[in-house]
Length: 230
Image 1 (cartoon, rainbow, N blue to C red):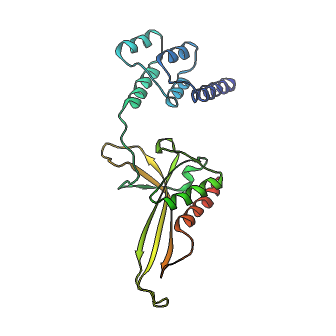
Image 2 (cartoon, one colour):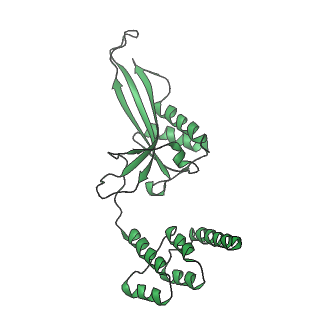
Image 3 (cartoon, one colour):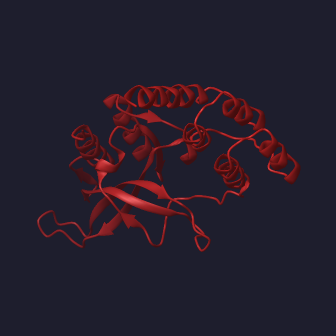
């Protein structure tokens, strides 16, 4: 029994690793795996973790039955292809009903998508992430394991009697790390799960700024806390 379990585990790992560089699975691939005696549970795992291009017409399903492909495998083929064919909704940052989690949920992951409103903050954040050598920056949300969003806003804190200025402006920067949740029918802007928030301020008064840019402080905190993950 132990030998059989080891062999099944080996088959699963080999098939999954190969699938990362293989073209999409087809009906012929499933027939070959089935006829080679690969257990249904292994084939199901392969289907779940691979791109697929199955023919799920009635004639094709009949052919799979004739080829002795297990019913449970054929059912998964139909479901997986339907999932691939389903129209993809646009996913954007800004859910009106976010969920909340912890940074530990992205432990061991490193593909990050960065969304920042202003160019200065973006440059600061990208430089800090690159310097840490812990992240792989990607160009789309679909490629990313998680995303980072940073926003700036100015808050007029009124006059400063000590400096004799009419206005004391506080620049508030908020950095959030998030992942996307499965899109539901009623969603229009995507659903997010916020894992981390760092909010920093920078004072501006009489043409002078005090302390570092909020983006620098916020991203430094994130990188430091990410390094603590096991």
